[in-house]
Amino acid sequence: MSTGRLWHRFVIGAVFVYLLVPLAATFLYSVATDWYRTILPEGYTLAWYRELLADPRFLDALGRTLLLCLLTVAASLIVMVLTVFTVTVYYPRWERLLQGLVMLPYAVPPVVVAVGLIKMYSSGPFALSGSLLLLAAAYFVFILPYMYQGIRNSMRTVNASQLIEAAELLGASKMRAFWNVVFPNILPGVLVSTLLSFSVLFGEFVLANLLVGGHYELIQIYLERRMDENGHLASAIVVAYFLFILTISAAVLRLGRAKKERNV
View 1: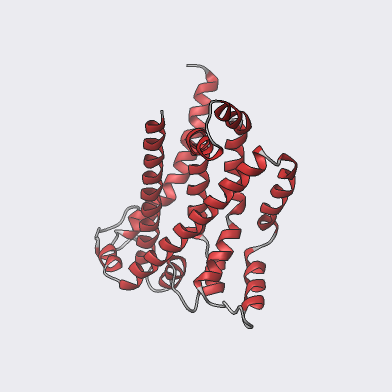
View 2 (view 1 turned 90 degrees about the vertical axis):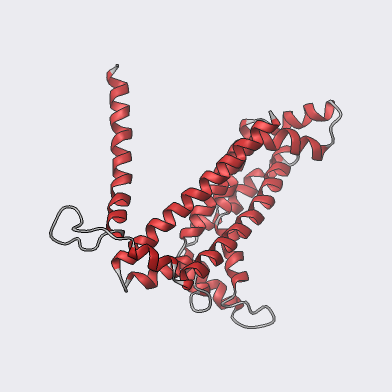
């Protein structure tokens, strides 16, 4: 085996250990009875997980956060796929303008966005302060860069313009050409953008806390409030959060793979 390949494997293994050790330690602390004087916990228990699953606040916060993130990501996905497709195929001169607009959230810190939204929508005919609708709108804008970049790269990789032209020459309508030809080819990029956006929203604390923290308890706010009560319980919440994200990601990737196999 070459020295370069050994070095690559060593780097990958080191990164894997670096990412895995904190999660493993968090899991051990979430099932530990006492862990102060020894390298490993002195005892193990699932009491913290039982307490977590029996807490209606946790289930309500998880369900509320899941619904909000799914609806926001779905709306952003529909808008960005159609927008990027239209600009890429029919109005390529607008691409630079679109890229500049969707990258603006990178330049504005979430704290500034939240304070500005509260100031604008705290009173008047469009008073939305403290509502989930306002948070959903902020989330929609917040994930635009993640959605745009993955979809745009996929659209460029498959050369959507030529695919549409070829499909139309064979008698397909624009809608059928997009749905049956272009979309299956950009599906991997769409899935990556979707999962990245969902993960970012599920862990976003600043916008959630400032916009609806006092009205609706989302999973991020629930975690922050329980951290001061019990470290073992907070670790159990983090592990449950990670497993939940992992399950959602695996399910989405499996559905995308099945759809791609059916189209093939």
